[in-house]
Image (cartoon, rainbow, N blue to C red; front, top):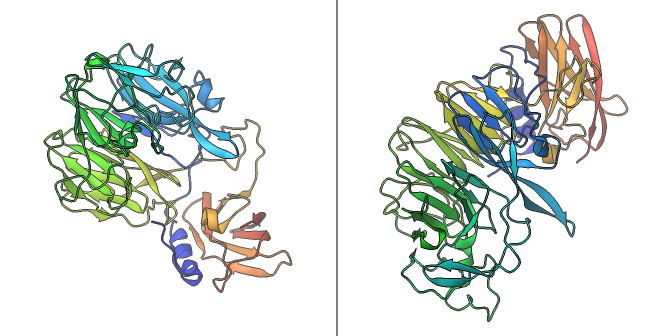
Length: 520
């Protein structure tokens, strides 16, 4: 939940926190990931991959590796929607936002596969159905099905693989499985929401249709919510070889889906309930296994009225669950031993005792930067004694379980030349985002360089050059690049009117002038 504060409180709360970042100057990178909103991270050992374009870092090196051969992403419209890793192997699920009838629709693009650590890539088209694929064979029956023939609403939200077997959770396309490393795919049948299991010995009369049933349709009577369990959002292969499939209708667990024929896969289906030993909500968008004890953690979101949200864990393959962080919308979770980090819309939560107690982290700060106070946390990965967390305002990482943080954000160096423009001109200062919308962006950052240690004073002026704000001084501990932040209010805490805003940065021996546009 986004925290809302009165304008006057914003002036005295957010601005001082922004200017306490005086421990050292910023480091400017040329090679780095493409944007600060990071929803997908993959880690194996000391190697981390982040989206939305493909960017790799090894051992927290200064510069990042951008694979030139991944042109469908780095030079095309594709974006990273999911990623799974093994030594030297990357399976990346790709999608993009299509526009249909003026509406943005998340759409499948396919998969990138690499078996050499990302040096080269094979592109795989999304697994769609033939127009006449209106049945799915299962247990000697032909189950009626609606073929998914277009990529819209079928992006691969989650992927998992073991050996040559790949599972993809792809929204309207449900759960898809390949046993030959992406060359061919099966559409995997799941039970309707109302059923507790699906076995090849049973007899079934439902239609495998990911749409809400219209009155009089075959599913409308017995399976009015059946479609919710046909929508794939997450998948996991646990260390025992069991396959977990999270949908908008609960969690499905199979002991044989890893290698059984598609028409013989058995599923146990579990729904949310009112008991404290049940799940809170039916929408499962992330499933993680704690490698230290084999427990399975699931995010729970609300699908239907009366459900709850938070995080649950099971140590008995879904027979019972323990609830955590009730009421929080959790996007991801990961582990290092007994330390658990959960990424949520309203904050970052850390437990150092395997979930017995949780602490919501205060505003994330490093020695020289900070995340916006209302930043949302979207993804977590862990490896080599390091946590990586993706947020709406940058990538953060810690090696001491959250006691201190390093913040990594997209850079446009003042000296010119950046990852998007080799011959970008050098500048003495700039403001970003520009134009700046306080409602949308929260704060605008002003970047500048000082050749001397000392103090920087930043003043802002309206079009008539009347001073509207004087920000708290920035301590310059040594020569280098620094940033200050402004939330769009004047010295009385009142939101500044739309239009040009001029700023002046006074540093030892120099004054730097710049301009930004307020557009709310």
